[in-house]
Length: 161
Image (cartoon, rainbow, N blue to C red):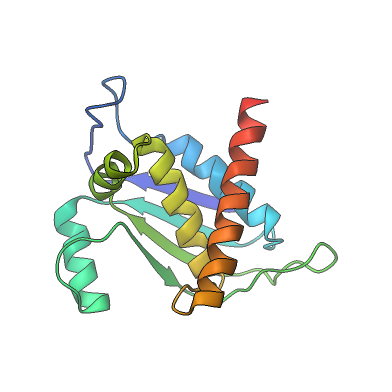
C-alpha cells in the first residue's frame, strides 16, 4: 500500500514537546491501518498533505465555495470503495487528504484532547470520505462516525499494547 504523508504546514504545536505538531510517520501508520481494515487493495495509492491556514483557506474557497479554512478536505481520484476480506477493492489511486494542523490544534483545544489525536481523527475522517462515506444525512453520519471511532480506537489500542 503506497501512503505518502507530507507536512508542508510549518506548524509547531505549542502544547507539544516543542517539536512539530504533526507526527508524519504515525499518520502514515494510521492510514495504512485504516486502508487495510477497509480492505483496500494493497496496490492502492493515498496521499496525505498537511498545509497551512492560508493554503487551506484557498482550497476551501475554491472547492467548497465556503470562506475561511477548514480542518480536512478529501479529493477522491478513482472512486475506490471498501472491499471485503475475500475481495479487496481494485487497485488504483484513492486520492488526497488535505489537513490543516493549525485548525486541528484549535479544535483539539476546544475538545480537550491533544493536537496529535485530532490529526489522527481527521486523517481517518478524510480517508473514509475518499472511500465514499458521508455525513450529510443523520443515518450516514451515525454510520461514518461510528466507523471512524472504531478504526481510530482500535489503532490506538494496538499502538499502546
